Length: 164
Image (cartoon, rainbow, N blue to C red; front, side):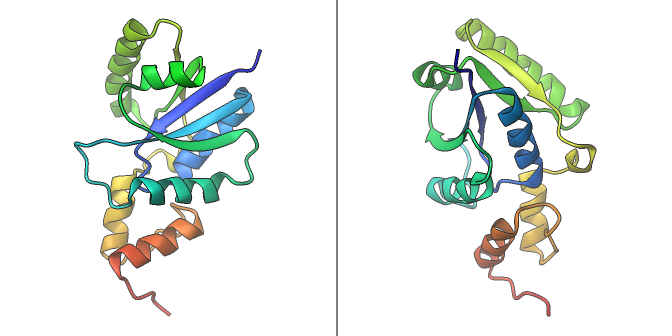
C-alpha cells in the first residue's frame, strides 16, 4: 500500500530544519506532500507561489516529494490527497504542548489520519522562519540556516547589499 504523508506549514521561508524533516519523512513514507498553508490571518513575506517555488527548488533532488498549497482544515486536505499521516516537526519542548493539542484535535476530526512527530538534527532545533527573516532583514548572514537560493531571495526581498 502506497503511504502518503503531508507536511504542512507556512514555510515563510523554508529552512534547513524544514528540509531535514522532509528528508526524514521521505525515508519513511512513499510520498511526502509539502503543503504550503494559505493562512489569511498571517501576512507572509513571500507569496504562496514564491514559497512553493522556493520549496520545489529545495526538494528537487529528494525523490517522492511534491509541493502544493492548501487552505482550510489540514485533515480535510489529507483526506482529499489520500494521506494517512500528518508530519509535524518538534524543535523543542516548547513546541510539544501546541503540537499535542493539534494532534488530539486532528485525531478527533479525522480519525484515520495519524500525526507523526519528527525531530530535526540538533543543529536545527533553534531555527525558525521568523528568526531567519529577522536576521536577514537586519543584514545578518543566514547562509547556514537556509538553502542558498532562499538566502538570495531574502536578500532581494529586504533589498540588502551583500557584503564583499
